[in-house]
Length: 168
Image (cartoon, rainbow, N blue to C red):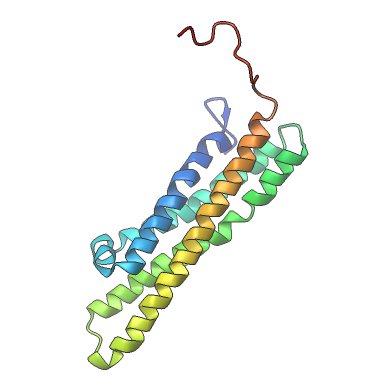
């Protein structure tokens, strides 16, 4: 996919990533910390994380097409390099969402009282790992978006208002 209504697809697809990664990260952390939330979401959590994971290569591939169709400079190259690093974070969100959903299914099937302590340790480990991966994914999305905005807008506007600007 390269163009949508005459605009580069990357410009549109990137908004899915910008929204989905932080929402998935938040849902993952909430479900890892609060089992009742995970029960309510059920299969929705890993499905949501999968959609997030799938959106990353779509935006990246569209970005690679766009990179070949704009003048190359250091800002564009930096943005492309950062963008290539998001897929492992999105993969981590998906794997953890799947693990939490799977563990929830096992717990619902009736773990014995003797398994409570290991289950508690696993829940704590899942919560900590979820926090780390969620924070990494959100920070990476911010860094990629910031570099993309700088690449797109560094020469694209004037710091002083043009005529016909705000009249109020």
